[in-house]
Image (cartoon, rainbow, N blue to C red; front, side):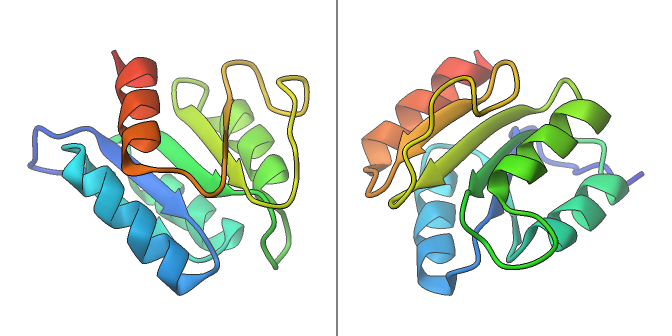
Length: 124
C-alpha cells in the first residue's frame, strides 16, 4: 500500500471532463487537501486499491465506463467503508436515498466555498 508523506487529507477526484476535473482539483487543493485524480470509475478503483490514505472520493455521477458515479459510490462504501463520498452532477438530481449511507450530493455548478465547506464538514 502506498501512503503519502503529506499530512494533508487525501481526496480522489473522479471526473471524466478534463476542465471540470482540473477546476475541482484546484478548489480542493486550495482548501488544503492533497488531490489524486481519475477520469473514470475503473481508474478510481485501481487507485483506491493501491492507496490506503484516501479519505474522500469526490465523484461526478454521469461518467462513461463500466460504472457511473452512483455505482462507484456504492462500490467504495462496500469495500472501503471509512471513505467519505461526495457525488456531483449538473444534470441529475440525487436524493440521500440514492447515495450510500453518509454520502453527500453537491449540485453543479458549485463554488469553491461550497466545496471547502462540505469537505471541512465531512472530514472534521
